[in-house]
Image 1 (cartoon, rainbow over the protein chains, first blue to last red):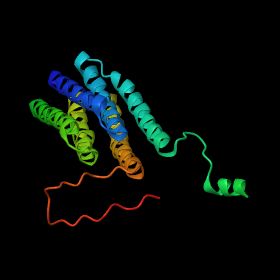
Image 2 (image 1 turned 135 degrees about the vertical axis):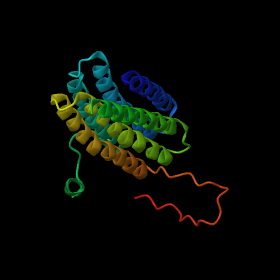
Image 3 (image 1 turned 180 degrees about the vertical axis):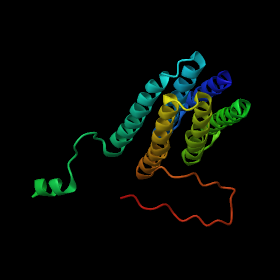
Length: 97
Length: 115
């Protein structure tokens, strides 16, 4: 049963990878990376059950955390062109005066 | 009872696998970014929840189920959030849905002006 789940997740990851490599816009690629991360989380969990070691779920939980933070950071960078502090409009107004 | 749990877990895992493959296929085949968002949501929520429920039924009442529930809650919150962030960033950057030239009847308003 877990073999079926692992195989279908693997096929799904391959399909998403195709979209990741020839996605026409940047946002297609970001969406593909995010979905690929979710599939990876599930795949690690299924792999743990397949090997009879469900402790792999800790790794998949960690991967879920990193995946979310990474996606949000990429999107924030491409929207604001800055990841950390950025000049607020009030600061810019003070600088101009 | 054991047989019932086993059959239920089979059903959940097989349908979860089906939804993940269908969502990935939609991400590959849909014509537009805005259409691909729908397919990504299907595999992110439906496939994920069904697979996790199937795995939790296999594990029984142990610590593994608690971990699975934590992963499920986290992915249930963050999946739609990151999809929404991608849609919002694409909208701000000026990406607009394709208008099908063959469609008639629906009056599509002109795209909003960029700030």
